[in-house]
Length: 336
Image 1 (spheres, rainbow, N blue to C red):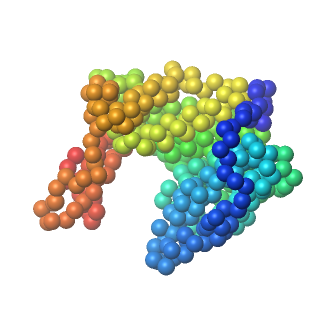
Image 2 (image 1 turned 120 degrees about the vertical axis):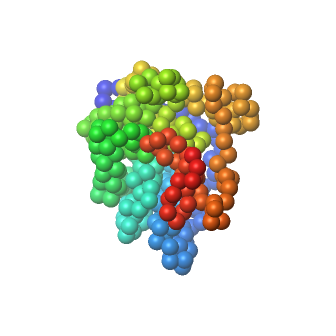
Image 3 (image 1 turned 180 degrees about the vertical axis):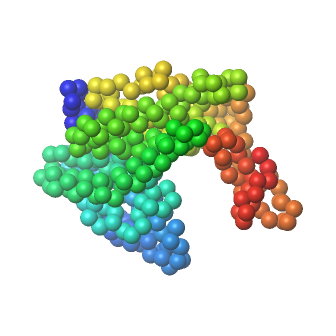
């Protein structure tokens, strides 16, 4: 896709470490999915069943493999890699992605966004294949009918709450949805969809990143500083999900000759620098490398047993920006 800027795909050689061109040892996409689904069905666990479909089968296995196979084809020119990638995408568009309950359960819109972003990038590398047009059309139709509505509902609901004054509504889900929508817009040459993704990008950067350390109530007076994000206090991985989705989107926009890194006073660059300090401190186990006033806490351990000898769990309250210890039974807060 090109709207007067550079190509959406930058042609760069890859290191010659591509795996041998052979069938996936775990079987076809359908076989892999059926195996992990059978385990959940046997346990009669519907939530686990959906989670396995959405996260393990779609995100961790097939969407990643489709992208890796597409890269292998782009690097080596071997048609078998392209065939593997297209077969995976075709299977999800025609069969796997229509399983009852998919994208409706816990994390459905998020995992849908992660997977379709990777598959859209894979298809960008496969445009010259003979069956590309047919499979791309099926993939686009499936995404629009099954996943896009779920992502749109989540964005609409949370943005309405944010506009009504409910704090800290935008998070890594919105970043991932921005990435997915932008990838789909470029793949399908849909400028309206692209512009909508850009709008959500700016809104997410503002609410998720920019306000910390800058806006009244979120600034140094309240103990927060520039570079933080809504999930800084949550843990190590969720801010990386959030910032990573925004970076991917900014890179795609850059390929379309549009600079999104400048959004909201270059807040994304500041956040990346801040998060890099936290990551390096954690890897080195050196708290002196953290930003001033910060420390890392281990919340994998239970703080104590409650008075009735029941163990609870830690739960992060995004709106209040606090970790709280709760009982599983009644969600009663025991400790902050």
